[in-house]
Length: 232
Image (cartoon, rainbow, N blue to C red; front, side, top):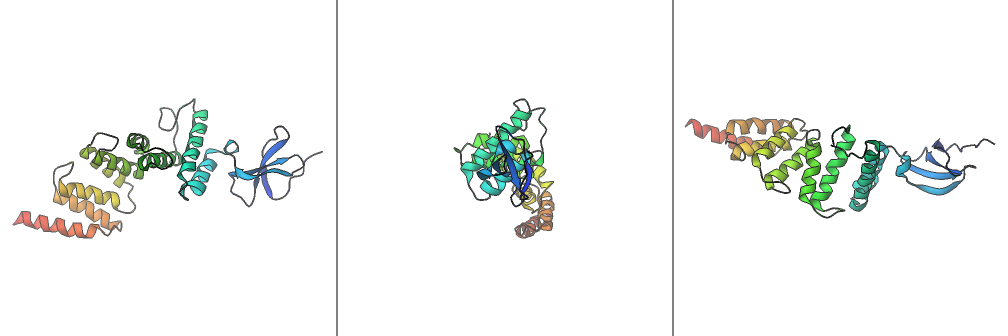
């Protein structure tokens, strides 16, 4: 006869070999159990990537692994996410030509870069970190900021302070806390990667202050002092 699904199950996936995956109304949708045709749970609730879409895999990685600093499983989860994308895109990964990307994809790649940069859950590799961040720097301001640090310090890439400045300017377009604007101001103030320019530095520090970054206050004072000296 027709199977009766208990009310706590919000959805049921197709039966295969007599069992199906279900979602519980009291659980996030990426957590599923396996039931038989009588509705009896035969395997407890757990993360089952094969039954999840990309968004659900992303949620699980962030909520259960990354935020709890379980970096080994974060790396495993990202690789699971990568396999799904490759399956959907003829073997191509995020950033490869022809692969549509979303903010979720960009965030995943940025996190992967951080794992490589800090050696969290995987052997430290600055070049892989820089490669990851370069894939998404155009779309993700934090990735652009992190890639700028690589170019500034020569980590995983050839040192290029001018490139670092360009990346911080790019990140500053979506700056919410004033940090990226502040970094641009510092570069102009010190003449690092560009010609020294106290007026430009002052403008960037003012932008940083407007976004609430308190460190900008002192630099605004220093810029004004330097500009007064130039007029003496």
